[in-house]
Length: 431
Length: 209
Image (cartoon, rainbow over all chains, first blue to last red; front, top):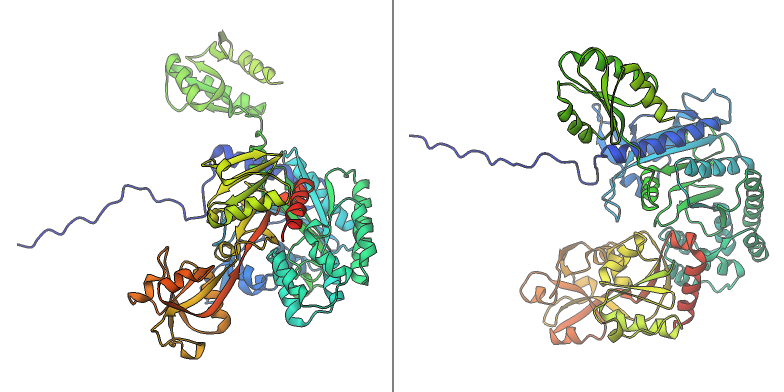
């Protein structure tokens, strides 16, 4: 007799999500969505057209804009024909590809915006969030302070539209840094080290590297004081007295103009100048900025000018833009006390016996007025319907027992009224 | 809101408290801290955490600033500003072998050197720089035991005085890294509360001997 094989081990745990990826439940998902819609609506008011680019791009295309470390973080796999594709980790490069490709005959400047979730195959400190949700805008084909100021002003308005109460935007310039570095005339290997140290925000290593240069210039000191080169307009004058190279001087002049224009945009209090702003200096070519919330350790929005990206796709054009990290914005809002809790539903419509037609008609009428109404799918007594209303979390309950008057319960009051009057009451009550 | 500073328990605690005192920031003794995990004093909030956790507190913004050994930063590459070399807590990460081992300079290393360490990232980086193949065994303690029982050819471990090495009859063959205490800062704190945070950084920097 053959032995009966043992049953395969069974697991009671339901399949979960991949580490670093998670579900958003209704409260959080709706809050994120509300933030996204508010930001997109603001972008639309500024004339930015919404585009959708694919979730997958060829690694070849993405590599035109990403550094080696960012390329390493892509989720890559092979397409059916063996070519390498990746899930996008950011949307600026696909939008640049689009602006230089299918939109190449569209007149410049182009104002484009997008909303997407992007993924990063990151094993670092924030590896528990490998998928993030972003909204961004790109202004392609416009150079100069007016364009820089426009996207910064738009970013500020977007944070405001998303419902943030306290935030600030720090504006810097990558050419200020490039000018300082070129002015130091460091040996190539030291310069590589300086760039790496700044990218890692390691000022101890930076100081060591610069100690090897005999020159004790004011520009060297500026580089060492990078994290403290922050303030209002006065910081530009202070820095202007210390720099002695054309690139940095031009950057300071640019920033002065952008700062003036931001005042004309009606922004002053929320904007600071930060000459020590560190963003990816190989990518950005001009004015850069970061938006911060009150108590969150990371920037909520980042952006800047990237004039060398589009030419890699065959259409040389200046460009600037930014991205808002919706997850972080939602987190900042939640920490600050959250949005006012809205009732999820305006009305729960229950029925019993021959009440179905009245209930369906009542639901339609309420929705016609923009109310959120759910109609029950099974017959219930009034007592059972009261419990059901609690479960679905509706502002009021309507119970339809047949043709004619219905029972309407709102707050602690219960009345019997004709259906039309109940609709009028519910719609009117919320006006 | 008060500026918060994360300081590590363990060997860097005394140095951190003495730095705060020299800088005229706060006078706190280890005895006063006792078993408390945080303390508010003179407009400063001190958060006492394990050495390996300082960077996490700072990166996530739970502390504006932190005092942490560079050795911890090697292993937890985070998202912060490393601002000042505080000078104290000096130690070396060294590659050591048993006294009787034939291994000495790089020319004597076997084609694949097996190294036991609590610092796998810094060790791997060192061998990447030297271009030598390495097989790293990550341990959590008592690293000096590994070569004695044949688990590894060598160890990479921290040493301040060399006493532990001598006790275990180990001989240094190379220096992998050099560590001191560092002052690190949260990237957003430097922007959103730059006045208070920069003022504290300046005081601490000026107290570095």
